[in-house]
Image: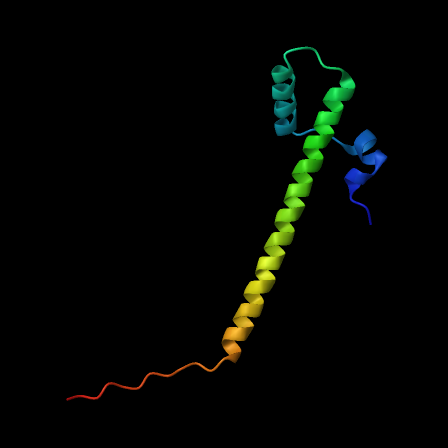
Amino acid sequence: MPHPIDTLEFWVEDYTPTVEELEGLYAFALEAGKPLELEVLSSELIRRRVARLTTAQAAGQAREKAASRDKNSETEQTSAPVPTRQPLKAR
């Protein structure tokens, strides 16, 4: 199933920029130092949204891998014999 950002309907009907995206777009326009065409601004806005979602998705996958490794590590640790301490002898 495709992600909503992969559909035209999302961008035309459902997309609403966040405050952070608008601030980033404003900074982008200021850095350009000249008026920008709507195509340039919209492309930048889309690029930023896709980059943010891609980064978030990659971070989620990394967390899942780490959790899986931790779970496997815990399983290995609990299945290994645990050494016992011998009581100290009084002299």
